[in-house]
Structures are given as C-alpha cells and as structure tokens.
Length: 150
Image 1 (spheres, rainbow, N blue to C red):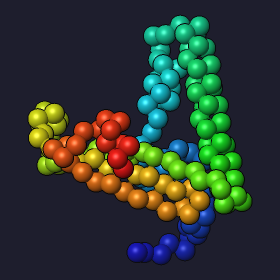
Image 2: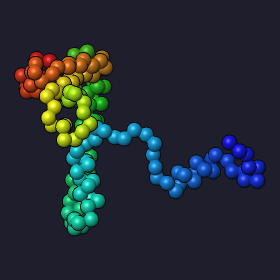
Image 3: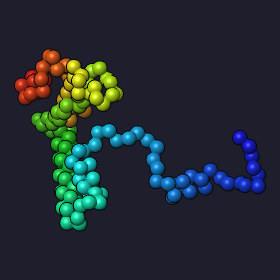
C-alpha cells in the first residue's frame, strides 16, 4: 500500500461517505422470513396496483404485524409466569426445518428428491431447554398423531 501524504484522508471519512451515499449491507441474507409479510410488501411496491389496493395491503400488513407483536408479548408473559410459579409450564412446538436429501441445487431436480428429513422441536420455556426430534418421512408423516407422540 502506498502512502500519499498530500491526500491525507482518514478511514472515518470513507466510512461516513459510504454509509450516507450507499445503502448496502454486508451480512447474511434473511432466510426464514414471514411469507405473509413478504407477500404484502410486494403488493405495496407493485406499480400496477391502484392506490386503494395498496392502502388495503398496507392496512393488512399493519394488522399482521400487530398480531405477531401480540403473540411475542404473550410468549414473554408466559415465560415470566413460568419463572415465577412452579405450577405453570409453558412449551412451544415447531417444525424447525424440512431437509431434502440429497441436497441438489438444480431447481428442476428439487421436486424429484426421494427423502425428506423432518426436524421437530419442543422448547420448555421454564428451563430454556429444547429437545429436537429428527426422523425421515419413511418412518412417519407430519400428522397430529406423530406430533402427539413427540
């Protein structure tokens, strides 16, 4: 690296210039995003929709986000109650991931895969511990009977 004493510009100058003039981020892309949120955001940005349809989509997005916020506030409330009272137990259950095998990045082959691995999680809100159940679709399905067995 060469030094140019006549052009004494600090790193902070370049950093501030970059942050103000380029809205780029360097990080991992969001993978697990809400499909409803994405659908409504696309509708709002759609140039072919009229203003009334965009207002309806905006209102739906606001209601959807309020419901999600209410859910997370309730989950925090249950978690707090679990910590305070020994007679209360809160659990959350979720299919964490459906993993196709083999992993092939070619789109045309995606639906021709033969085996899926299911990852199911039960999270104890009192102890903050989770238990994962992994199984392949040849062992069981994703129905209510399998979930109750977990």
